[in-house]
Image (cartoon, rainbow, N blue to C red; front, side):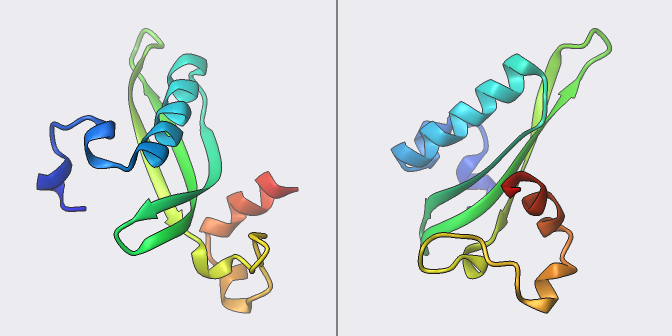
Length: 107
C-alpha cells in the first residue's frame, strides 16, 4: 500500500477484517507486555493470500512506556509447502537473515 493510502487511518480502515484483527492482537501483546512479538500468519493482500513472518518491536520512552511499535513483515510465501509448513531447504534462503528468527520460533 502507498503511504498516502494508510497515513492517518485506523488498521480496520485499510486491512481486511481478519487481517486487521490479527494485527491488533499482536499490537496489543507488544504494547501491554512491552516485549517483541513474533508470529507467522497468512495475510490477505491485493495479490491474494501471503504467508508473512511478522515482528513487532516496542520502542520505550525514558519512563519505560511504549511510545510506538516498529512492525516488520517478511513475505515467506515461496518458502511454504502445500501443507503450510515452512521449508528452509533452499540454499539461498539459509543465508537470508529473515530466516534466522523463523528457525528460532519454529523449533
